[in-house]
Image (tube, rainbow, N blue to C red; front, side, top):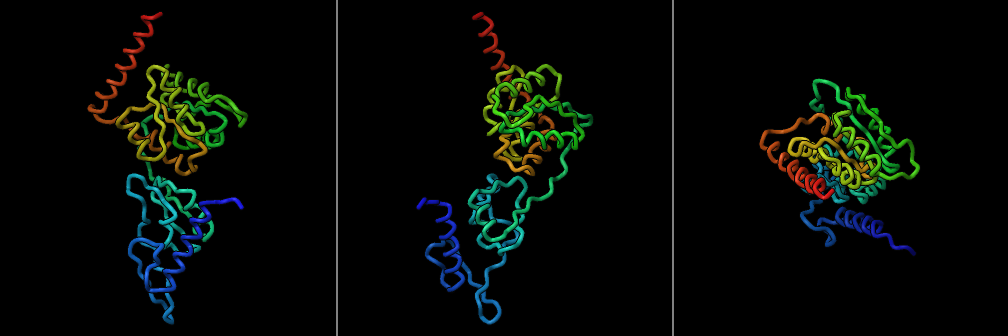
Length: 269
């Protein structure tokens, strides 16, 4: 019989919860403080879910299966904006009929005039790219599609280069690259002089990339992002202006590094 550690962990969690519900004493399998609440007819009842969902720290915003322990079966669980949900937590929610609900995206600052947004993806990022093109239009900007046009296997550097070159030439104001993880496209795009591509996975990283690093190309891992979170990242990236002069001074140092190595390459020719 195949061993599935996720199923074993789920069963252990449910057994621990059942043990806690049957006795006033905490189960040895469960750490922390446990409270048994007496309901009608002296029956133990599961505690109400806390007002705010427990997460592994405000910076990580990681929702684990443990965060669902006190949530009633068949109810909604409000996710914090930009939260990441583990596979085990999704399985736990599905098995107990818990709906993981993301909040509506908050309004984001927009530019005074529409932006021309270069958009490109490989086959792994194509499904998200189709949605993203519509999102860019809905935000009042003009998307320029650099491909790919389907799910047939292609090479991500080709499309990352096309997006980056359009931004570097001034044909487009900003760019978006989507592939399987967002990492390879960022590497490829950053080889084009003048490009500062950032692989962003949540709202905080998108805001930081723009405000602190003056990023002009957003790279996303299509299969690794849920559509609502990807939209929030896109909104944040397009709506966040470059930050204060102290950030610009540091970005200038990045540019000088780029120029220094460009001169060395030119000298060798």
